[in-house]
Image 1 (cartoon, rainbow, N blue to C red):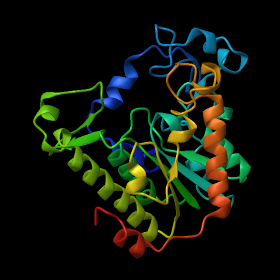
Image 2 (spheres, one colour):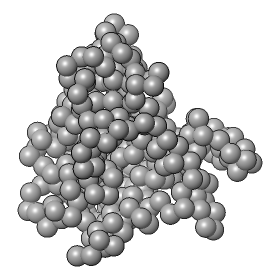
Image 3 (tube, helix red, strand yellow):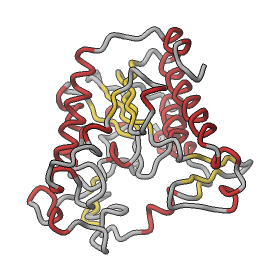
Length: 288
């Protein structure tokens, strides 16, 4: 298989991208090995770290080991034809594991629990459109997972798609195009756009006969995806816990305890989940 075929889903997912992909890449990384880095994005010592957490043994010497396509994931091509169970994770920084070592990532814990290959297409600062594009192109490149586990990023993160580019928007990334884009200034349109993407993800999974597990991290998102796993109670509402338990090395993202709770929630869901009727799921939705 040629390198072009191997990386097709990655190259086609982010053509001429401006915004998050470039913005998150502007921090110190300090390469320590082949595709292995000491820091990543906001998880760096330049006034971003929670220094007390960063000195803990589990965080002090952690690194980011990336595969050939730049994802924090098991190899794609080496495991493509494996008979072993394959789990594919998609999401933003929480599922990428920003600020935590690989063995602490909830996605890695879940995959290990089920003795599954850990495929992870998550990106820091990602948006739901990006997840959908990555999933679709991954499948178009000939890859197939036994289970797709997607953590939908907040609905305020969006894409502006033009003829020759797309621009990713985040709370800290703005442009003139964002200012004049109608969806970005209308909360209900944000929700509607996000919900349509979740339906597209579900459609892609149904078409390809893939089991789908959905995760939400957005306040009020349970109104639109009532059968999804809600991560919010395991992170934002743990005020009685120590910061070193709640937060990652960067002092912002989910840390050790949150990752453990995330993993338990996903494992329990997979073990006990009953498949939903996709038509009934749509008809019962308040946005239908």
